[in-house]
Length: 155
Image (cartoon, rainbow, N blue to C red; front, side):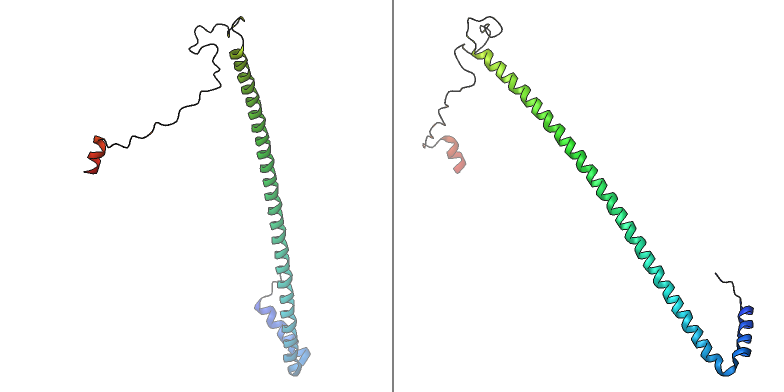
């Protein structure tokens, strides 16, 4: 800022000594030093406040960018979920229609023409409903008599 060398400072000191005299020069030097310290303190205070403001602005900008990124990711995820939900719904509807068609074919009377009428190649009798099952008789009761395997395990 100011380009003052040693020779310029020496000239200023001699002029100050001549103008102020030896009695008032130390007081003037203390007063000048006090004002220089105050000016530096004020400068550092302004500089620090400016740096804090810039850091706060940068933090706000980063926060806004992150918020926008999250919002975009949320929208993308939501659209992907909606697309998957619609796809599953379409597939489910197609499966229901297919099951309904198969059920209608199986329930059709034997006298009708078409693929359901040709039941001679089908392994199930035409009167049996493939969607209903006979009740399964449960597990067989356990025979409590010892077997050869039980005897081997005990040894």
